[in-house]
Image 1 (tube, one colour):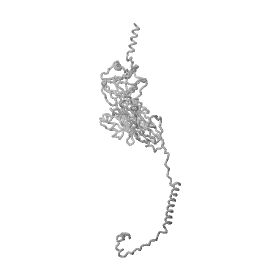
Image 2 (tube, helix red, strand yellow):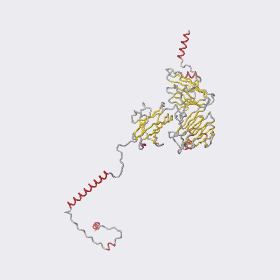
Image 3 (cartoon, rainbow, N blue to C red):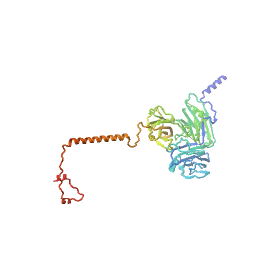
Length: 538
């Protein structure tokens, strides 16, 4: 009897699709990270206004009532601060060339410390909209070097600096560069997580995230930055006041009982009857024979906005966007690479710094790790940046090269080095800017860079320098003069010897004297007829 019961238990354990999962508080070893502070959108360009950098920081604040800001570097810069709520700022300005502007409308920023700021009055309809705010700043200051929409920072360190793109256009999947660092606000966020052992027959992972807020009446936005390598589906469940925003490295499926924002589009709930319990969500995840739960996450917070970083099927920790000076890419950002070739067959890519003669053509191939069906990769522009000549930049005219779409998902192009052919051999940085679009919507804009050592080509027949008439030229002219003189002398001698005896001396005709009366009839300066014309008239 005991043996029979044991067999039944074993059979039940093996036939159970999902084994029990013990929810534990998230530690550093779990592949999920939650933060209440992040950069929600922005842009970074090389554009300036009369040599002065223009930086706009748009603060979206929920939990903080004050923050600190430290201005470093010593470049001419204008920093414009805007906030969605009244807040106090402790300002430390170590940049004597920096000027701080505070936008005042329905909300304003009060400065504690040396107050050398300038107030700018702005209508609330512009202050509350990022696109309107960016357009206003471009019109007001003539350019915008960076725009950073920052969620609940406790402190900001501003270093200034220029980016690479020619114009500042808002990107929703944006991570600030070295020009800005920040520390997140401290908040109470409870995150529990567990991972399931995937059965061998499962072809697709299912990751469940459940939002359990402190109160269900407050609207909340949860942004999920999901990195996965295997076929995966996200199940997002929360109260009716929850809105999700998904950022995926590659195309990802999702099911939710809440509205979802993906690639800038707000979609209505596609699974309105999603179960609101742990057991119900697990059963929902294993309803398809090809899918199985891979992880389950519960988030409980009183914050109005949260950012969730998640990686699938990995034991490493998904890193938050680093605030160090070295990191400028987000953990989920697709990687764009560029390979250079010295022949049009695209067979052997050149590694490292590529050495090329200035009279040769360079062939390039750019690809992205964004494997989204329908996404299109384009090359916007390319330029050469001199290493030894300071800020000298040479624009390149690129020519698109053919690439079989069935076997090639990258973009190929070529260019000549004509703009730098007159320079001496030196090192240049090739910088190209790419754009990934999906149904005419910009998904990703990124720059790629490769090093080039351009060697000045020397002609096999170099032009000779002119230093006056050389000996060979003088001798040539003298010899030609001698031949001409000899020919003329010979011709004169021939005429003299053959025609001198037959030439008769012709008598000179007598000229009839002109009478005084006739000469008096001609006024001074009048034209007289020649003897030939006079005889013809007679």
